[in-house]
Length: 623
Image (cartoon, rainbow, N blue to C red; front, side, top):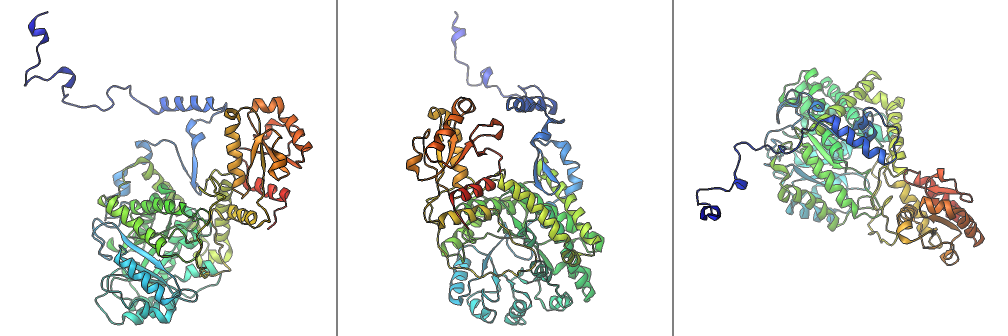
């Protein structure tokens, strides 16, 4: 070996393994990928999972419904997104898919991010005044006040806002004409008010909630009295979301309401541009983050189309959006998880381009929020803007093949629903005829089925319940929503009703889990069964075979093991359990197992609510 063979490379020499190529191909070491190869791999996995018959194309087996008539696929590529530049434009220009603004919002004056708006409805003036001060000192940029019986007294509005600099903090109110008049009287002829305030009039929302027709003829007169930069009417689409609507129904109904308001305002003498400028839209934001992102983007595109047809100028057609975290997703049980739900929803609202965001406190379903829950609500937004830097990029989801495709699908489905409402005579007529109620009921029935089978999981309620939890206690809140019209639903309500019944029973109801075989074989199904029964407030003591039934204090048992163990000894164990005093025997597995002596089966995809109601009956738990 010569000396040159072992010499260290000179300073100007680069070892071959460290050489930097002129062009870097990130996937250069891999064979080209195509959808056909991916489909082959997916089909192989599904067959291994027991799927003998597969659809064509195979990805149809993995479709998931996210809204009425709208499904998402497991894979998207450039062909799914269509002609992106033509379809979505750029931020601040029609069709406004990518955002209503290209920089700071001219109304809110917020240089980056969105307007952080906190809602207040506590009837005690001193408490609300103190809460408002804390909010404005700690990150909140605008206020939303619920006025009326059971909420902030209308005649106390001046006291509640006595310490608020109205030239810095926009104020929005809810409560109909009395609330609007109170706010107008308070601000008087001031011309230095912060832009972005709202009189909050929404007669069609009241119509939807109460079932009583409302008069829209006075909207134009109030719009003329509104301070510069303020909105007069809010199209509150959350009333439809709270009744069970998917994003499609929520968007379609909001368009129908917006068009009805445009007609009322222009009939009252306002120009088309002034009528558009008098409206803002309020949408729900859920923990289904991509659907929320796409829905907000679709809403702006749809409203731009309405404006284009109506002859509005491009600047007036930009929809002003106020996103509020969903009440439907909020739980009373394990309410701490609501913090996570609202964080995801707030993230989606920000990414989706909402101008204003309200995060409901995690204890909103329990009663009036306390100082801690309000602090968490406002800090959720501050964290996403200040620490998460969510506002540094406009429309961060733009260009995503998945999001762009979903935006398009939601827009098309919502427009079809909107035109159906218009053919029925408009939103008021569709509410009176029952068209809207029936459509929302069908949408909720489909969602309720997924909730019942736990295809849509509710963490802390239908999945991973904590029977030992002690929910925080809150001062009861008055029911501020009219009744007689559309219903109000929550995803967790039926499971929580079962939990309430179980908690109210003289003693905690129990189902004994009779395990078969070693721990490694029965753990999976025993864990599954325990999770399901506990979702109904039922304790699940467990032991090997029938030996622990006597000490479990129950007459209902569930056998847990493997299919092999069931074939060998489940029927015999069922007989042993009955001999030991069991009056009902369940089995953790599918009905196709057909085990003698078993009354019912619990398995993935079963109707968990139906099973829990049956168990309650068997154990004597009454409403």
